[in-house]
Amino acid sequence: MSPKLALHQAIDNLSEPECQRLLLLVNHWHASIAPAMVRLTQNPTFRIPTQSFPIFAPVSPILGTGINASAQLIEERH
Image (cartoon, rainbow, N blue to C red; front, side, top):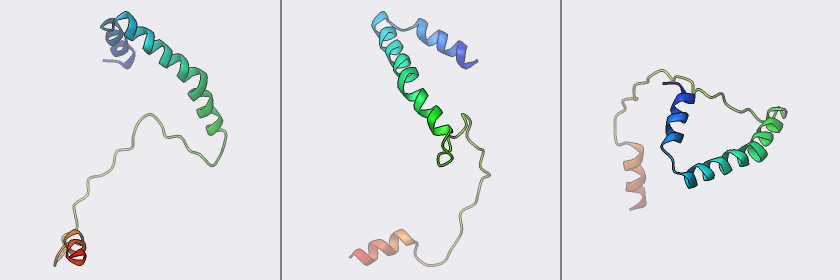
């Protein structure tokens, strides 16, 4: 299901007061947050991530000998 269709279906299930609050939230976002994000994209110091998250390769934990760091810290606290 596309995000747009899912949003339409979610809105169909909302009451009038909930729709009013959602509309206020969207209007607030367009008026204040969206312009701020545009300004940040123009500043090379900031990097806004894309909508999708990178897929990380699965990793296997390192097998070590002896007590683990958490147990060692607890032991040192005692």
